[in-house]
Image (cartoon, rainbow, N blue to C red; front, side):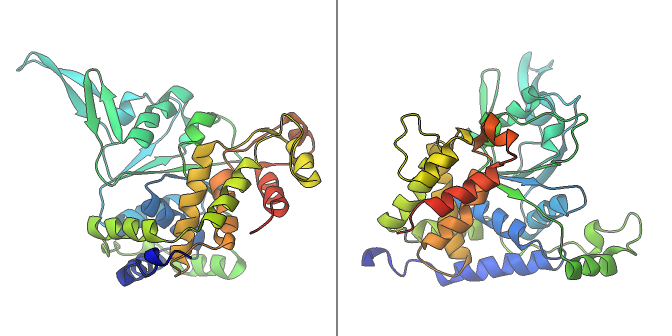
Length: 339
């Protein structure tokens, strides 16, 4: 253990995390995985894709976090007729100056909710690529910086295919995490019904009063600094890299174990080094969210599905055998030795 990095986590970081969790719990029932995924993205300068059937409070969770953080927020409803300029903005002619000037679109906000992102074609989805990767938007000769901090939180429905478009791999790879939102358990669903079934039409979002801001840009900067201070020993980092590398098919038959050779036939393409970086950052955030100042292999295991499921492309054989990305990632975690 590197003693020079111990004790660097400011105690207030844990308090900031609990304040956000508490504020969001006042409106959300359960959904701890969404809350922690958003916090992970905040700490890591990443973006999150939330996938689940309608009615699971994905949009509500994003809106609630924006209120709790006191940040600017814009919701973009993706539809088949949306144009790239509807997201980024466009140039318009100013008669007074005789020049084209930029008119900023809704992407110029701290938190951008790309709702039902798979309802727009690829050319519209690609309008977000520069914004998500470089934190800027180019219009003609102008490159305009986006606000700091900047997060894209997108939702998509996995079961509806009419009028939807598959997200290109380049777009998926820009998301640090993909979180699969499942149905609530019986007790949580009963709580939802008792809390919200009698909400009057036109009432406050989620049937609750507005969530008061509990943090701001300074606290978000503190969370980023705290996550960067979490110790990630070389052995644990090597384990994270080994997990990512095991998602790539072996072209030369030199996979380390029989289990990995078996998995290899189910993988067309695996995660790139961007996936290794995402897993590294997610594991650091997972340790901080668990109240620790150092990463354990369990943090890597816990973070791997969200960091890798959208970066693993199953082969034709996997589709024929009904083996999906989650099963592949689970198999990789079982096959790669833990240090």
